[in-house]
Amino acid sequence: MSASPHRRSPSRRRLAVLGAALLTAVGLGSVPLVVSAQAAAADLGHAVLPAADGWAASGSGTTGGKAADAAHVFTVSTRAELARALKAGPADAPRIIQVRGVVDANTDDAGKALTCADYASGTGYSLTAYLKAYDPASWGRSKLPSGSQESARAAAQARQAARVVLSVPSRTTIVGVPGTGATITGGSLQVKGADNVVIRNLTFGDTRDCFPQWDPIDGSSGNWNSAYDAVTLRGSTHVWADHNTFGDGPHYDRSNPSYFGREYQVHDGALDITNASDLVTVEYNRFTNHDKTMLIGSSDSDHGLRVTLHHNVFQGVVQRAPLARVGRIHLYDNYYETAELNGYAHSYSINSRAGAQVVAQNNYWALSSDRKASQLLSGDGTGAVAGGGNLVNGQPTDLVAAYNAVNSKKIRTTVDWTPTLTAGLQPAAGLPAALARTAGAGVLTASGTFAR
Image (tube, rainbow, N blue to C red; front, side, top):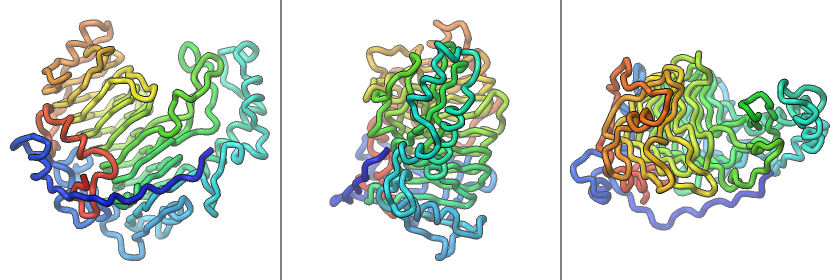
C-alpha cells in the first residue's frame, strides 16, 4: 500500500510569537485571539484545556495524561512503539505519548511496509472475483453481499484493521513533537469508551481502507463504504482535539476508480464523533482534501453529542463540516473555503438534521464563484441553526434565510440552549489572516508558542 515515508526536516527558522504579538501581526487590533493553553503550558504534552474552552471544559474539564509519571511518558517514531505505548499498563494510568516524525500504521512489528496484497494474502479475496460475484447485473440491487467473496473481503479487512486501528485509553495525551513533522499515516486512532483524551499537533494522512464493501441498497444507486476514520470517538467523553491537520494526501479521491457506476471510496471520515460521545472540543485544526469530513451522531437516535468546533479551517472538503444529528453543537470562528481543491468539490458545509441544535456564530466563508450562499447549509427539515455574525466574502449573511429561500425542507432558527463556554469568541472578519498562521499541525513550539 505505502511507500517508505520520508521524515520532514525540522525547520531551521523558528519565530516564537506570543498571542499578543501575533494579534498585531495579523491585523486584528485589540480583539482578543485566544489560542488554547498556548502561553500557559509548560509543554504541549502536559497542557490542559483551559476553562470555558468549549464543551470539553464542562464539569471536570479535560486534562488528558497531564498526571503521567515518568514511566508513562513515551516518545515513539514507529507503529510498533505507538501500539506498545497505548497498551502499557495499567490501563487506567495517565500517559503522554510524544510522536516524533512519521509513523506509518501499515507496517509490521519490524517496520516493514504492508500492502493491500499482504492483507489479502491467504484470505481468498480478490477484487476481480468480488466484482464478478456482486455485479448488480447478476446479484441485483436488493440485498447485501454474502457468500465466499464477501467473507474473504471481511477477513482481509480485519487483518488490515488489526494493524491500522489503534485504541486510545482514558487519561491519554497524544502529541506531535514540534519540528519533527509528526504524522500518523494510514492509521485510525479509535477513542472508544474512554474519558479524558487529548490529541494535539499531529498530521493525519491517507487513512485508507484496502477493502471497501459494496452496499447496493445504500442510496438509490448503491455505494462503496470504507471502514476507517483518521480519528473516531465512540462513546467517549471529555476529548480535546487541537492543532491537528487532516487530509487524504497523497492518495486523493480523484485517483479512485469507479465500479458499478459508483466511486470506489477508500476513505471514510476525518474526525467522527458518534455513539453517545459527549463533551468534545475541536479547535485550531485544519481539514483539507477530504470528502466525508466530520460526522456528529451515528444515527438519528444517538444521544449526548455536546460538541464545540472553533477556529478550525476547512479547505477542499466536500461535505460534513460537520453533519450534526441530535446534539447541541456550537460552531464559532471557523473559516471555510469552498473552492475546489485537488478534485474535492464543495457540496455543503453544515448539515443540521434529526433535531440537532446547532449554534453557528462568527464563522467566515470564502465563497468561490461557482457556489452560492444558499448552498452552505443542508438539512432534513428537523434540525436547527441559530446564531449570527457569520460572514460570506466579508459580508454579513443570514445563512438560514439563504438556504430556506430555495429549499422545501426548512432549517429551523431557534434552539433550546445558549452557549456559555465560548473562550476566544471574536468577530469573523480577521479569521482568514489569523487562522492561516495559527491553525493546523506544525505551528507550535514545544512551549506552546507559535513557530511561524
